[in-house]
Each structure stands twice: as structure tokens, then as C-alpha cells.
Length: 92
Image 1: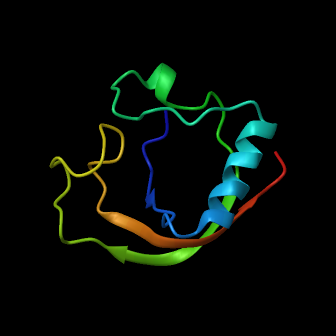
Image 2 (image 1 turned 90 degrees about the horizontal axis):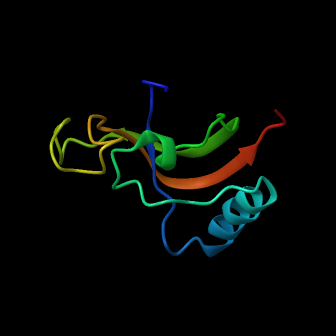
């Protein structure tokens, strides 16, 4: 499992980007699952999906690492890309 992560948040208003992400995951036969689980077998994809994410990066000091912000997989990170403006899926 990867230890390096960053939270990326697609605003609910960016429906076109949400559709783009959903279409790619559907094409790959992948489902977005509830990451509230601590079971990494069901909460993560078996293989990483190479992407380039465009967005604004910042250190979100409004929550401290390892608090109850986020889920069991992301709560130890305070760096975020928010809002995500675009995502490009690279060939694997």
C-alpha cells in the first residue's frame, strides 16, 4: 500500500469533472467505495491509476493530522488539492 497520499477534492459543482472520473472508473471496471472502512482490501484499487491532477494546493491548517478529519486512509495528511480543476488519466 502506498504511504504517500494527498487529499484531492472535486467540488460538487464540477459535475463535468465528476462525470469524467466516473466514466474512466467505469471503463476500468472499478467502483468508488466508501472509504470509511479500515479494510484496505476493499477500499483501494489493486493497482494505482496514473493521473495528473490540476488544482490548488494548500496545507489545510483547519485540521491537524491524525484527527478525525477525513477517513481512516487520509486523515493523517493535511496537504490537499482543492478544488481539483482537472484530472488527466495517463496510459498505464
